[in-house]
Length: 165
Image (cartoon, rainbow, N blue to C red; front, side):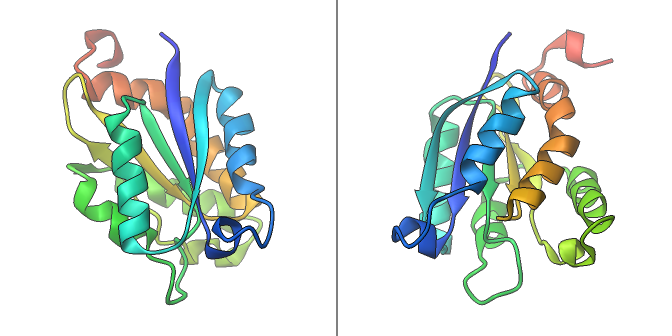
């Protein structure tokens, strides 16, 4: 089964056209290496409402994975975790911690990422949501951790007995 994803870049400056989004295309390229097809990349401004609306719309579109890049740090406009948290029915904190740990090997400040990983819903409509840092390196580290797990996580959440081993 081919898995489909939506990537959402969260950045005030990229949304305003002040610079080119590099994180979204990086995520799409890296996810493809794990057999995950990205249906599109959306770019939204930082903020709870903008991010929550984009993540909700992506989940409603029926993708298996919603991958956000950006807004996970500690600046006042970094609100991606706050936008995502109410959408998660099941948190996968171990996956988020593994993403931070992988990044911290090369960039100690990677531990400052507050990104969440979890599922919205269980059963046939379950969607995995991953908050990654906005840097291309943070995206690479996040996909390196979560990419091999997506099919298993989504399969289990959707009730696929083959994924339950």
